[in-house]
Amino acid sequence: MFGPQVPSVTADEVDSGAYLLDVREDDEWTAGHAPGAHHLPMMEVPARMAEVPTDGEVVVVCRAGGRSGQVVAYLMNNGWDNVRNLDGGMQSWAALGKNVVTDNGQPARVL
Image (tube, rainbow, N blue to C red):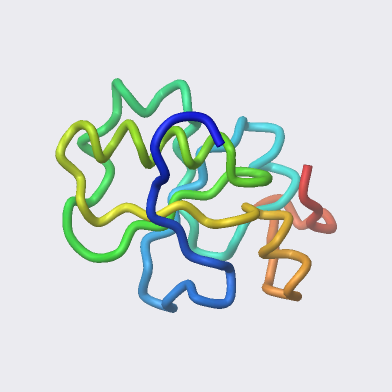
């Protein structure tokens, strides 16, 4: 693991009321994402931090947990104390049989 540990949750621990922040690239998002997730590509986070809630549970997700862990660390360094990394990312989400959807009606998949 590079850098400090960040708080994380497993896919089966994500509360139904959590704000899911998907930081994957556009093509990954389009291929499939968690229902109700909010898309904010990792490289846009510094310019769009005001969009990330400062209250309630925020679970940051990417494909496998690496990029989202970096985003959690970045947000924590900028004052957020309500962010958690989704351990294993969308791969673990899908492996648990949790719903993955698309906005275009195509079959959902995790890239």
